[in-house]
Amino acid sequence: MNETKRLQWREALRVFRERMGGLTDAKKSYLKSDREARKAVREALRFGPKTIPELTQQLNLPGEKVTWYVMGLKRYGEIIEAGQAGEYFRYALKESER
Amino acid sequence: MAEMKDRYDGLVIGGGIAGMQAALDLAGQGFQVLLVERQPSIGGVMVGLNKVFPTLDCSSCICTPRMAEVAHHQRITLLTYTEVQKVEPLNPGFRIGLLKKPRYVVETDCIGCSLCELACDVYVPHEFDQGLGARRAIYIPHANAIPQVAVLDPEFCVFDGNCAKVCPRDCIDFTQQAEGRTVDVGAVIVASGLQITPMGAKKEYGGDKYVNVMNPLAMERVQSSNGPYGHVLRPSDGKVPKSVAYVQCAGSRDASIGVPYCSRVCCMYALKQAIMIKHQLHDTEVTIYHMDIRAFGKGYEQFYRRAMAEGIRVVKAKVAKITETKNRDLIVRVELIDEGGRVADVQHELVVLSQGLIPAWHPADVIPIGEARDGFFEVPELATLPARSTCDGIFLAGVATGPKDIPDAIVEAGAAAMEAAMYLDRTRVGQTAATGSGHRA
Image 1 (cartoon, rainbow over the protein chains, first blue to last red):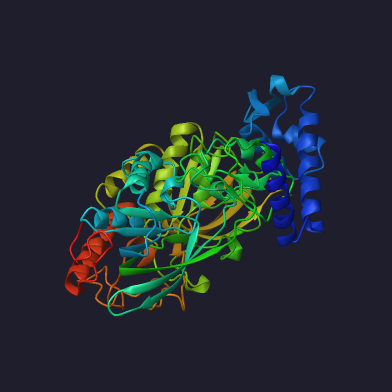
Image 2: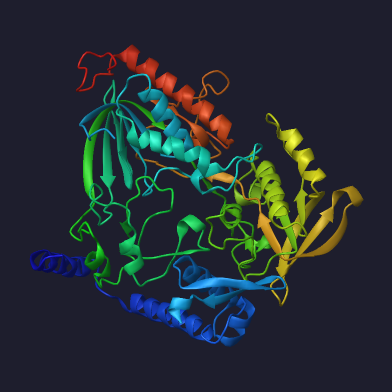
């Protein structure tokens, strides 16, 4: 993107941000917890594949939230399925994410 | 796709299967059609289903060709992410007030590459996956979306500009605002579709309390190969369920929740989903608790018998309540009709409530057509003219008039298109810029 276009969209973004009421406390709180949760899942998988119950035990999150983040990270290519342990799938960090 | 004009022969409200069929049938007769859809993509509910009954065809495989045909038709103009604000009779014809919501993406420039989505660092519950999957604040609605164009959700945007930095076409436009438009049309077809009964409607079933009590559209997404999980798993812990229960008439035939009518498709979609579970999970026990199985259509009775032959347990019972155990299993309290009303508590790992169908649109002051007592649009001559509304020139298709399956919705869409064509010929309002003569192009 050339410098003129970059300056134009930055100004447009500034106006857009003002029009939408800026980064509210609620949004900041959501973003913080969202990023922390994803980081925690990645960290928990750094030392080997785990099932969702194993992740839930390790993290301070409800099981359905862990499922949601695992499936989201899987969708966006950060983690992969890594075999099964009985009725649960194991999940692992993708090699490039280690 | 045809360019936007000031005047069309027909307006179709709703881009689901009935709306798309009506638009194609009307445009196929030579009329210029404007199709308006409030979601960022056409396809409606059908594009999110896994399979259809009773053929078990892939739903998106039969829906997406129609979506593509609508998008490329020379006589159909497609306006997505747009709401109808006003339908004003002109006698003949109508003046339509539209509100195009801002995507914050230039639609004509976006190539659907998803780089903006990948650059965004916010995870948001994905409506297309019924909240079970994640999307980003800027996202392509789904893999089969038409148009395949990103949309930015300002409610979750954190204004970091990452999307704009990576867009290869520089088509992120933060200056976009909602845009009002007015068009004149000759006739209107309302195909506004359905939503399901809210999960919390029947408190006894815990639909809004227990995560392993799922809604049927969520189960469709879970069963889909491009769904949020990739396998049939339960939401609380990702476990492959060994026992699944369906509760029929969970959101229908119940005056206490304001849905006294039968929703017509729930028995069939429960049988379909149950068969698909057995196909994917051979050892999983599937039980359908029902008051009576309604299998009225062509091939439906055979489908019901096939389900039982494949090992689906179909139990005549009324479910009184559902509670949750410590490990998030569900206890379903049932009154077993065929056992003299014996009450039993049965444990299952996953429960699907076969929720009913309710109208998706209640446009009280927007469009001059009446609503019936059941909340769907009123059809004054239901037995003989099922596509006509209470207003001359406005026609109805699909679930807008009441619950129905996909074949019936498509047939009704054809009927509405035919009625609209006859109306346009009769009133000579079928005059577009292209013809100017009252005859079709």
